Length: 324
Image (cartoon, rainbow, N blue to C red):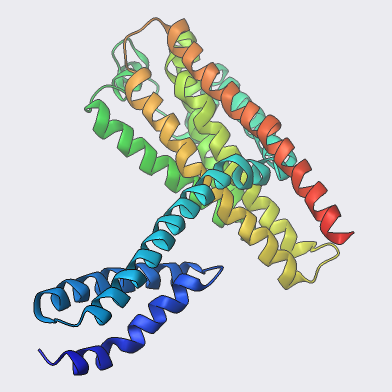
């Protein structure tokens, strides 16, 4: 090995690694570059130790790698801190800032669902208009399709399936909100499906079974859909009324908030999917299953109106100090 030529060829990369190691703040791309250069330089040092008798070169690279190792470990710690801050500040604050929108969506959705359920249950004309069969025993009867839907697949596969489906529904409601009408349509179709199921089960005298299977996971799952719909509609309304910002600035700000909500809802839907996959079809008494759903829903609402409200207040204080 020609050590001088090898050192001359790789010196720019070593200098770059040294520069990144000493740099106070790193962007995401620079942090990735630091880790890549660190691994590559470690391999090069091992090669030199096997072929080069130059202690000065080996010692210099060893010192560089020691400094870089400390920075790499520090970068990883900072990354975990960023993840922690997302769930303790960024995500709950975004949820809290848009709560009037998603609570409004929840109120309208539940009112429409209840109205449709009542209509389907008490009116034969509703079934004709909606194209529903007169005999729905296969769906509503004990052990029928409504109940077996939750237990016909392995728990793990079913939990993953409903997580993916609910994430898609929420994404549609959120990101079509910019156009408003597609989001409203998506929410209405979900209300229609839920209302039809409720009406048919009520007509069969099995409303208790309906709530016993829907509520354990449905409270948190529907709340996530409401949040997605409300956030999406807020994004669409920003296009109509940007407020004191320019339309581009307002959309950029609300778009970042919407992306934060979308990312955080993945975790919320994972929890509701787990409940739907394992708790809903568990065979435990309905009060126990519903109680677990209530705990999950209360935990989420406490997260939003407790942690989220505090995070917004802290941001306001920090902004005030910065402005001052």
